[in-house]
Length: 345
Image (cartoon, rainbow, N blue to C red; front, side):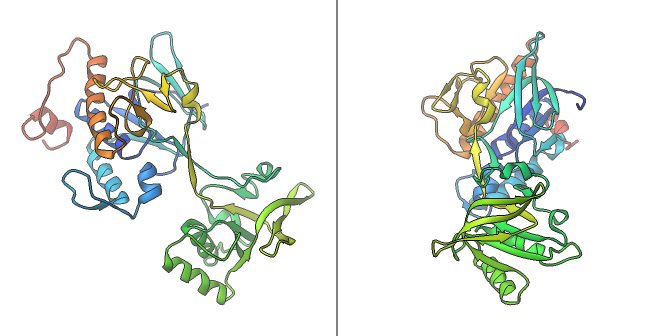
C-alpha cells in the first residue's frame, strides 16, 4: 500500500466546479489534492461537450467545454495542486481525531480535514459489453479504457463502438511500429456517431484494406486453452456468426455512477447530497458538496451556480480549519495577500 497523504483539503471531481473549488481554496491559503475517476481533468464538461459552445460563463461570451477546462487549469496553476487522475474513491471513514480517511481503487489513501465532493452526476466509468465471462479477460485480452498500442501490436484487434474514440482507435492501430496485424471495427450497423471527417478517414482506410468493418451485435464468446478466441455475433440478417480476435478494445462511451458515495452516510434526496446554503456543507461536518451532486431549495444545475457554491464552501472551510482567525473578505484587485498567493508579487 502507498504512503497515506495528509492534506487540509481534498476535492473529489476535476470538472469545472471542482477546478474552481481548488482556486477558491487557494485564495483562502488552503492547499489541496484533487482526485478524479477519469484519466484527465474536465469531467462531463470535457466528456460530453468538449467541442460544443457554452454561452453563459460570466465574462466569456463564447467558449467550448474544453476551452473552459483549459482556462480553469491555467487559473489554478499558481496554487500547484496535486492531481490524482484515473483514481475513483472507494472508501471513506471518520477517524478518531475527526479527520477523514479516503482510499482510491488503486489503494492511495488520504487523511484530510475537509472534503469537497464536486462529482457532478457521479464518477464517469467506461461502459462494458454485457457478455458473461468477458470480465475474466480484462487486462489481458480485453480493454475498456486507455486504448494503447502495446495492447494490440502485431495482433488481430477488434474495436467495438461507433463514436469518435472507436474510429480513432482503429485508425491509430493501422499505422506505426506497433500497428496491429489486422484491425476490425465492430458495430451493430453501418452508421456511426462520429465527426464526418473521422468517418471519412475510416471509410478510406477500409477501402485501402488497412482496416475492416464488421456489422453485428456481440451475443457470446468462445475460448480455448484459457484464452478468448472468438466473439459470437448476431448479424443484421439475423444469423449467428463468429469473429476471431486476439485483442478486444471496447469504446462504448462513459456513464456516470454515484458509486460508493451512497454508502457514506450523507443525507441524500433523489441521489443528490443535501447541503445548507450558508457554506454548502453536507450533513457530515467538514464534508462539502458543490455542483450538480448537491441539492437545496432553488437549486439550479448550472456551472456558474457551482462556481458560487465553491466560493462559499471555501470560506466555510477556512472558518472550520482556522476557528481562531477571522475570515476576511478580500479582493484580488487590491489585496497584497491574495497577490502573494497568486504569485503576482
